[in-house]
Length: 112
Length: 114
Image 1 (tube, rainbow over the protein chains, first blue to last red):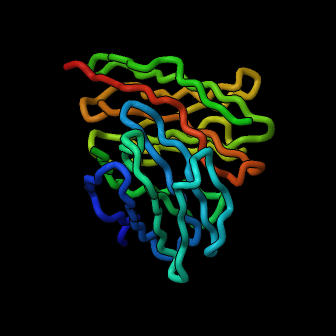
Image 2 (image 1 turned 90 degrees about the vertical axis):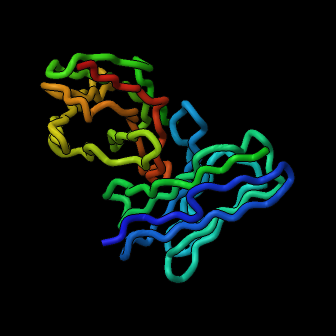
C-alpha cells in the first residue's frame, strides 16, 4: 500500500512568492494534517482537516491556508513567502482520532 | 494547554548498551502519548503509542515506554542499542480537547558509538 505521498520533495522560492504543497493520504484515511519543521526543532502544527472541513489551526499567520478535496487529498498554500518560512513541511494522515498519524517524507521548502 | 519537554537534546551511547530517552508532558486531561523517530532526510516513523490502555507500551525495533501519570513522564527505553538506532526521537502529546492534534517535543538526537 502506498503511504502518505507529498509533492514536490524539494522547492526553492523567492521572498514574496506564493507556494502550493500537495499531499495524498493513505487510502481510507479521511483526516489530514500539516506540520512545519524548522531545522533543529520539532514539527509545529499548522492545520487539520477531516472530511474536507477544517478542524484545527495552529498559531500561523493568515498567509498560510489549506484545503482538502473530495478524494481527501490536501493542499497547503503559503503567500508572500518570508525567509523564515524555509522548513520541511510534513503532511500526515490517519483513519480516525484513535490512531497515530502516518507521516509523509515532507517537502523541503527553501526561500531565498 | 499541552506541552512536552525532552530533557536531553543529545544522548550518546555505545552499541549494545541500554538507551533511555526522557520525556515529560503537561496535559489538562487524559492524554495520548507517542514516540516518533526521524532518520536523516526521512519522514517521521511511529515507534509506539499510549492511549489509556496498558501503561507499559511495547513498540517496534525493541523499544518500549512506560506511562507514569504521577510523574507526568513517558520515557523511551531499549535494552541494547544498535547502530541503526542513531536518529532524532520526538515525544508527542495529544488531547481530545485540542482536536487530538499533535504537540511535539523539541527532539533528542541519539548517537550510537561503535
